[in-house]
Length: 399
Image 1 (tube, rainbow, N blue to C red):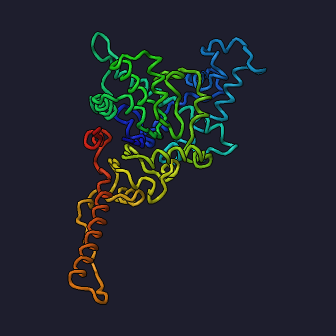
Image 2 (cartoon, one colour; image 1 turned 90 degrees about the vertical axis):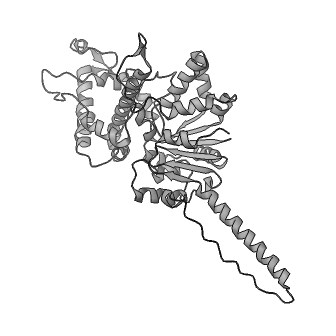
Image 3 (cartoon, rainbow, N blue to C red; image 1 turned 120 degrees about the vertical axis):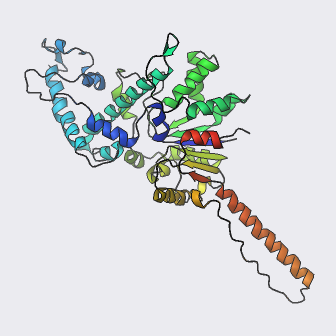
C-alpha cells in the first residue's frame, strides 16, 4: 500500500489554526503598538523583542534601555525606533489597506530588494501567529486534576488525525504503515507531527527522543517550509528566539516558483507515480501549488491512483475547475451511465456469418473493457461537502 496525503490549511482549521484568508485578517487586526517613536513616553511593543531576538533579545525589559546601553556601536533605542519606522509602520499601514485575499499574495509584492525587510517581518509575524495557534491548540491536550484546563477549540472532539492514527493502530504493522505513508503539507504548523508524537509517547510508550527519531524517519514534507522540528522549537513555543532562522525557511507560493528545486519536485513526483491512493484534504488547489509538487494540468502522473479530494465550501464552478485540472469525474456526474460505443464490423471477402459474429463479439468485449477502465477513473471523485475527517472515515481503509 502506498498512500499520499496532500494537505492544505483546511486540515488544520479544526485544531484552531487559521486559513490563508483568516490569517490575512489576523494580520490586518494585529496590534502593532504605539509606533510614535518621537513621543517621550514611547514604549516599544513587546513582540518586537521576540521577533528580533538577534537584535534586541537581550533587552527584554524596556527599563534596561534607559540606561544608555549601547548596542552594535549605536544606542539601542535608536536601533528599535529605526526598525519600527522603516519596517513595521509601513508594513502595518500597507496590510491594513491591502486588497489581497491571503498573506502569500500580500507578501508577493514585498519580495523585491527594496521591500525585503517588510517581507521578512511578515514571515516572522506569520510564524508568531502560528506558534500562538499551536500554543492554544496544545491546551486541548492539557489536563489538570483530570480535567481539560481550557475551553474546547476544536470543532469536534475527534478529528482526522485522531481517526487516521486510530485506524492505523488497528494494524499489526502500524510502524511500517506510518513510515511509508507520504504527507505533502503546505502548512507551516506542526499539528500533524505533534499528534503523532503524542500517539507514540502516550499510546505506544515511546521515550520522547525515540518518538522524535521516529517522526524524522517518516515521509512528512512541508512543501513551503515550516516552523521547524519539534526538537528545535517545541510546539507552541512563541518566545523561542529563532524567528530569523524560521523566516528564512518559509517560502511563499511565488518564491517557491522562483526558487523551484527540481530534485525536490522529482522526489514528490516519484511518490505520486507509485501511489495507490492520493488524498487532497483541506486543499485550495492553486495551480502553482499543484505544479510545485509535480502535478500539471491533466494530472497524468496520478492517473493510475485512486484519487479522493475534499472541496468543502467551494462553489460548483470551483469544483468543475478542479475536476478538470485533475481529470476527475465531477461529483454530481460520476454516476451517469457511460454510453456504449458503437461496434462496427466490416465484412471481408469470404467472411462467414460465424466469423462475422466472432469478430463482433471480440470488438464488443474490447468496448466493454474500455468502459470498465473509465468507470475505475470515475471512482476518483471530489467530495463537495466533505471535510478531512469525512474522507478518513469513508474512504481510508487499510485492507
